[in-house]
Length: 332
Picture 1 (cartoon, rainbow, N blue to C red):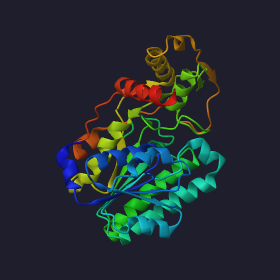
Picture 2: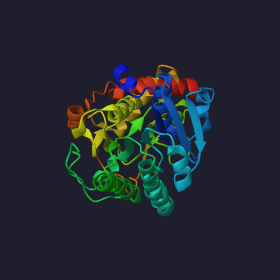
Picture 3: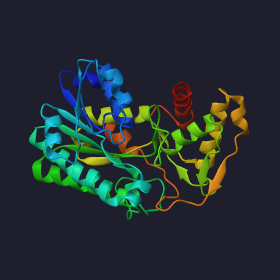
């Protein structure tokens, strides 16, 4: 991500749906820091007002409090938008298993509302959060964009349908989209609380409070964890690319390395012990594997490198050090 890329957006308005969420608020921050006009659409069901509190006094920032399940809210947010970064969704495989109806309403009906509103508003490009869950039961590693399996959860189904709708909107309406299949994103502002908290902030919070983190299974399951700054880079690259071949397809957004859950917990324990030596003594516990979880995940990022000049800067170690430092300041 370079200043030249961000200069392309100067004078344009970028709509960030889910802008009060973890990824969305980080995107808003980078855009605002580069003097780009930002509209945030959020209903605060999972996003937090504190994430966008620093932006409210910025004349380049506008908050539209609304729900993507309501077409009129989408139309209001898109009214003057030139580009859309669609991050709004109900994440979490377990949440979708417990409540598939709401997950479907938000992730499919809401996504379709946004596509229609953005198309009708003349938006130049629609970049959306897709998911690595789309690979489903396809076991081969690394995951390559053109080969997927059968979805293993309601959440995975919704994110795959997003890709299908995006493709149809291109072929039917000549509307440009790019889908970004996120692989286990982590970093500042990711919520450590709640039943569906992601593993890294949850473990960090537990270690800080001298509570034992609990790993599902024996800890051998692995993930391609990627730090938030890599994800921001990919979104900006997708938003600003002039490469026509790069449009109307999907990309893996990851670092391209695997880390097991036991390795992850051990790294977090080590880095947090630098702030509090007693964390070294906190025990790591285990329980049964969770329904719907994919055993291993590893992305090929060759397509993103070739077509979108993706060059992730943060590996798991450097990203965790950044995240742990932020959490220590904000959770203590």
